[in-house]
Image (cartoon, rainbow, N blue to C red; front, top):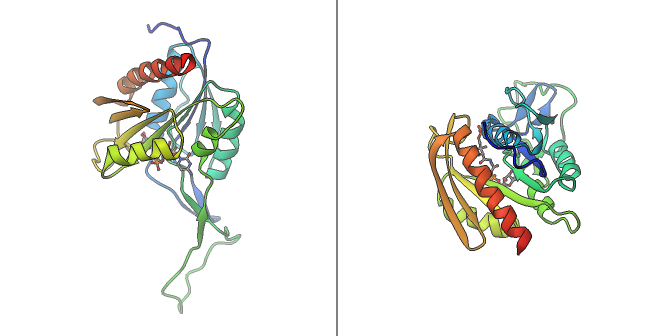
Length: 225
Ligand code: PMT
């Protein structure tokens, strides 16, 4: 059994997709299954950390000893994340948050009409959750982001690390359908200020155990800096 050496740490993790309603029966979302974030929550809890998991709509059981908060939309995830962030030492954004939502959610089902061959939906930007967490002036946690990229993985991830003012970013190449979204496997490239490391392809469970080590090493370093 892993050593329960992280009992002093509160960790909050977002996982899964968000779902942005179009009307009462339709929505916009993405292919995130929640597996990566749930595996990471499990790995932290196994080490004794107090874990809060803010989950979008997924079909996964709650890992043992993890407190789960279910949300649907990005705005709901934003509210729960901001509330939890100030109570935790480490914030990890593994969720695939929808960047945009409908400007207006139709109150009734949108009907198909004979005279309209086109339908236009107007989207507006959602708040960037992790950017807001990283901007906290008081009680700012150590902030770890993920980056889902289909090209220029390292370059785009390092750009997000700077732009979002993160302490660490975990990049995955989601152009390979055997990895990333909705797969049992992943591979990660980690970046932080003045450092980088790769975690080669493995199950999300095994990767998570390694990632916990890497995050804790950086977290401990940041508290002595
Ligand atoms: O859930 P799985 O099927 O297991 O798949 C795992 C995964 C591929 C979804 C995961 O490993 C991953 O990469 N998650 C981040 C996906 C993503 O949305 O990346 P991004 O590059 O668009 O966002 C960068 C960072 O900003 C992320 O930490 C994201 O949580 C955060 N973000 C993005 C938009 C937004 N409005 N708010 C945010 O906080």
